[in-house]
Length: 171
Ligand SMILES: [Zn+2]
Image (cartoon, rainbow, N blue to C red):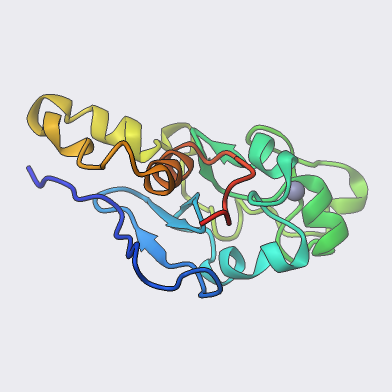
């Protein structure tokens, strides 16, 4: 069984204004970008661009609440999908895993017919859950961080929880 290393971070580099790194979590169907976990099918270009449009899980609580399955972001909330992207990125979620179904959004593509086609969202696991299933074998591999390093610890926690912590750019 392959053990896992932690997301790469380069503490000494001048990351402040640099673009965050996109990181594919080994052995899982997820990647992380700017402290948010995304399903691998979620378009990476969208993940990289939505915050500047004021949409997506790093700026929108609805996206976090409705757009994440087990802390993995799969699609926008109805507000972002319809009012920011006019349906070009899907119909939007009105509840966890439930897309808006109103007549006026029927013309918009459902993400379950586009990029999330053939994905069983009930089987989406966060990397934590995923790795927990190997706990016995990889027991010691998850705590390699210096707990006194606040930035480091925070960012790891945020990545794993897919929660807006208000601290995503406080490095
Ligand atoms: Zn949203």
